[in-house]
Image (cartoon, rainbow, N blue to C red; front, side, top):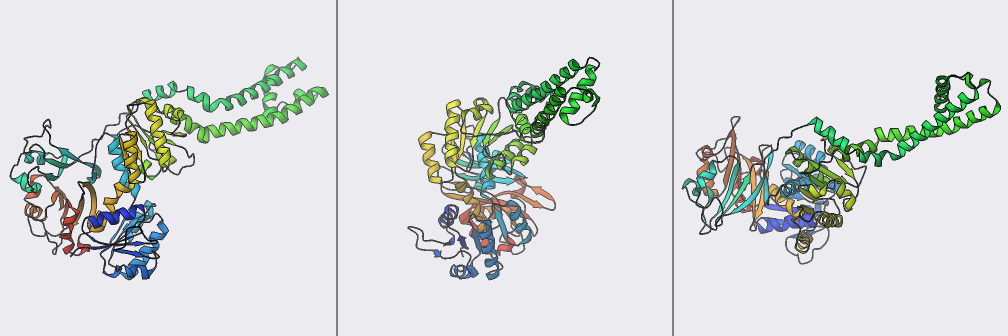
Length: 562
């Protein structure tokens, strides 16, 4: 029996999830607050949070509910109503607030929270590193890119046995698509089949982490070399400071000239105390004529203003944003770095991934009060405040010598303008652009011939569909219209794979085992194929979404891994 899934909220993201699930053969029903052109079947129109609308979609008989609106409060309201009607339904929530999502996952059983930004960011990072990816795997606390290898005449793997590739722990073989006929990967590996011209392999590759070498002297020299930027930030402060020093000098000369019995030190001490308001050596003017006393009063008034301005500028420079700006600009690498334009949810996730892998990153953000500024700076990543679509801003981050530029702000037009400006400055620069509308993303890439144009909605859709189909999803990908899902499934006594050898189960169910967690150890490689599954084991596997119907024969709660 096919799983019955409800998609609540058929906006841009929700409708794509609805279509993908329907394409994969799931019994899917959509709930929308307005009619959809061209869609009449399997759509319920009504208030998304109303119990009558949920009942009309037969939520009491459904295995999973996907909440896809971009309003966290609305999704939470629908979630509570759905759980009252069907306490055992599996709920997949789209939440912008990832902290709230983590809390819900820990509190509620059968609940999975997903963020479009977090799901899409790894593929943007992979694209910046030069990888053409079709998906990702979260394995061993790392994001592994999934890509497709086409075996042509010059491919180094032509004629190579699949068993040799299976032994390499730096990659995960996911699926085998031979040019002639159709056979599963595990059978081909066991038989020692060789790759032929026209064959295709879907592979997950272990990401490479660069060692981050720290040269403190080099960083200091870089700061000194960029002191020219100090002039731009500190010009007003230096000007006010000079005015203050000139006032002190003028007052000192005046008092020494008035009385030859007054030493230069006493006159200077009095001038500083009088102008700054600290006082001291008042006897210098006690016997002075009226003109000197008037001069002293004027200097006190003017000095109070100048000192106030000087303190304010100094405080702003040291404790405010000026010092941050100066320090960030001074630390911009000269070459081999990545420029991320936009500090939204996707941008900060991209920065985190690239930085954690040892790459130097610089970000450009227009909003000086952005909530992620402190987070990114705490990672040691320079933040340049400015408009990324201006050539002066891009030149400040050395865009002509960076590895790649990622335009990932929330404004599609700003992203396109930024990419065009970057291409004008550095025609050979790889540019990765974020466009929300998948159709617009494709046309923009065709017209402007950018390297990579990605839509977060399109990238995240498979993960929502996969999470609704069961298990703890650890990755997914789409190739040739087929949705691949990687998941962790807990082996229980009633599980369809319990008591069977992994090799036999994989051939019968057309899945590829990734590894097994059992008795506090990990089993992979050749050993995993001969392992018999028993209760308590956690099997990580990848398979087409259409094959998940077999796993649904077990109760969905048996498939969930915490």
